[in-house]
Image 1 (tube, one colour):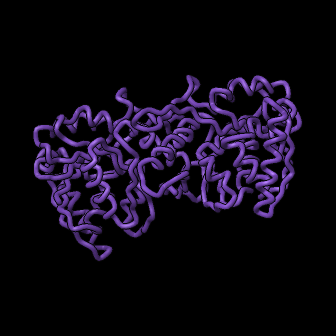
Image 2 (cartoon, one colour; image 1 turned 30 degrees about the vertical axis):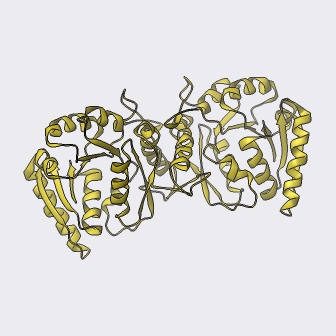
Image 3 (tube, each protein chain N blue to C red; image 1 turned 45 degrees about the vertical axis):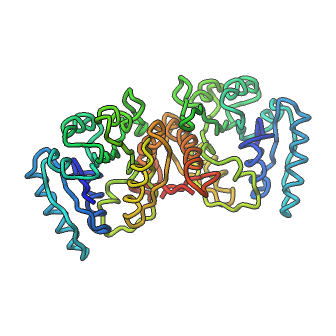
Length: 222
Length: 222
C-alpha cells in the first residue's frame, strides 16, 4: 500500500513515518509544501532507522504529488492547516483514496490544555466537510504522543481510536494501525463521535503535566 | 473518615459504596432523598458484601443528615440533580467538608453518546458554583463503569482522574480513591480541566458499543 504523510516532516508525521517504515512494508510518501524539505526529512528518517538496524521504503515529495500517488493520505498537519491542506490536494484524491486525520484543536491557558473544536464539532468532521464527497475520511492516531512515537528506542502498548462513517475505510485504517508494533486500533463509531476522541489529547497533556514521572502519556482502554 | 454517598442507592454510588466498604475502614453514610430507601439499599449492600466474605460500616440516612455527619460528601446523583442536591444540603456543609462530584452531562443519539456539558463548562464546575464558597469541591470517579464497580467478583486495574483547585482536598480524595483495590488516582489539574475528564465517559460508552468483547470499558493512562 502507498501511504502519503502530508506534513510528514514533523510532529505526529515523523513518528508515524518511522513506525510504519520499521514495522510494515508499505511505501511511504513523505509530503511537505516544500519537496526539498520532504527529501531532507526522508534522509533523516533513514538515518534514524539505520541506527536501530531497520530500514523502510521512504520518498520525499510535494504534498500534491504524494497525495496523487497514495492509497491512504494521512493529514499530519497542524489543525489550523488541515482544511486548507485538504483543499490544496483535493483534485489529487479520488473515490479510492482514504483520507486519515489525526489533528486536534486545542488551546492552552494557565490551567492546562483545553479542547477547542472548530464549529463543525471536531477537526475530523471539518476535514470530512472540506474533502471531496467521494473521498472516505477516517479519524485516527489522535491521542498518540509525538515524542513517544518518534523515539524508536521506546516500545509501547497503546490504543488508538478510529472513527469513520465508511465501514470499509475504517476497517482498512484499523488494520493499518494494528500493523504498528504495540498499537491497537479500536472502533469509536462514526465521525459524529470524533469530538470525544479528540478531547483526549488535551487530557493526556494535562495528565503528563500534573503527575510526577508521567511523560508522553498514552491511553489503554480496558 | 466518614464518607456520605448522596444518591448512594444506585448507579455509581452503589459501586463506590460496595468498594469502599470492602476495601477500607471508613464509615459510609448512604444517602437518599427517602431515608427508608437508603436503609433498604444498605441491607442489600451488606448481603452482597457477605456473599464475598466481606463486611463494612454502612448506614442509611436522608441526604441532609448524611451530609451533615460526613467529612467527605460524594454526590452520586444524576447530573441534572447535582446542582439541586448541593443546594439541598448546602447548610450542612462547612469548610471542613470536601464535596466530591463524579457526574457527567451526556446525551445520546443514533451515532452514540456525546459530551453535553452545562453552561458552566462541566458538571464539576457547576457543582463548585452551587456549593458554599468555603466548601472544597473535587471532581473524581467520573469515568468508572458503574456495572464493573458494583460487581465485587470483578478485579480491575483502572485509573480515575482527579481535578480540584484546593491542593489539600485533592490530595485527600486521591488518597481515598487509591484505597480502592485496583484503582489509581491521577491528578488532572484544576477544576477548569474537568470538561476533558468528563468527556471520557461518553467515549468509553462508545468504545464498549463498537468493539466486540468490550463491556464496561475503563481506562488506564500510561
